Image (cartoon, rainbow, N blue to C red; front, side, top):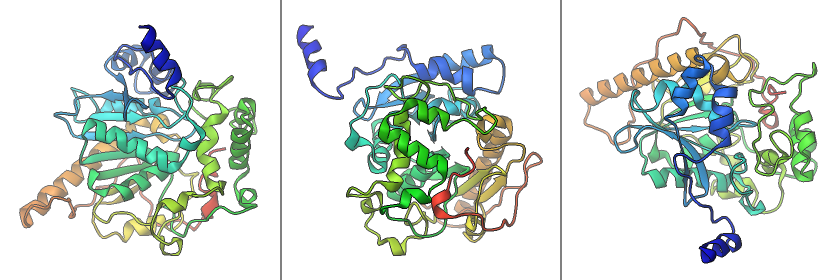
Length: 391
């Protein structure tokens, strides 16, 4: 026992794995209290009791899991800022577990779980984060993943699909599109071109100022629209979400080599999108977005894919957190779209030899009575301003 204690004290990032009964701030204090909106607290407590807290990827990535990966198709959720994996409570209720269709896993971002040891600075890269998500997938042996992403999770979700296209069956993205254009390689002064709140997040991260990042989350009227505004998120936070959660924004301007674009072997002038070189043609794409969020020419790209399945849907009466503000509508749209993709797969397989990569999808989802599909919007996007609708 003494030897074990000494080993844990001297080896960095050697973490004792969670048991399914281990306490979890994200599950115990945020899942029902901040994110679940489909019923009353008792309904959520029953759901929460079935969710497992695990450590994946060699014991370094905390996850929320529901269902059986050995017999159910996989759905992986990637959250954004300043949220935790508990933001997917309403979708877990609808799609995950023994009474539903999917095994679901929601990994946490690095330094977005207060119960986990603070990461080393050299681990705070988009590249390391993507590989951490991949380690979760490898640990669980997942394939044909339905990838569901929101906010900043969209950027890394697109990059994950680019790196591992054979693992992704279909993708549902919410409120950060694939912005068309070439990336901006960090350079001196680039930070000054970013939206003010992004600049503030970067400065708070660099100065490790928890109070500053909290002030940055407050609207002009002194309120915050963020569901987990007062949540404890970063492992070392003294108040609120913690300045360490600002690290993904710092990557925009971090000039120390390698910069984030160096992790791809495609020259930046050949990139199709601002945050990823390209997107796999064969992966069906459902995009849900709020009225406040810029989409630019991305909607035209969806229309021009030619797979007859990829779709975008505008949800009115929401600002950004549509998955918690309109969870029933979001879940209904997702469920109907999954069925349409499955029907298209069946039609395709009836007309041609079986394909291992699901390249053909021939039926367009019908419009929803609870949402509006738009055919065009004016170009609103400047690549460095991808999240201006947040605060």
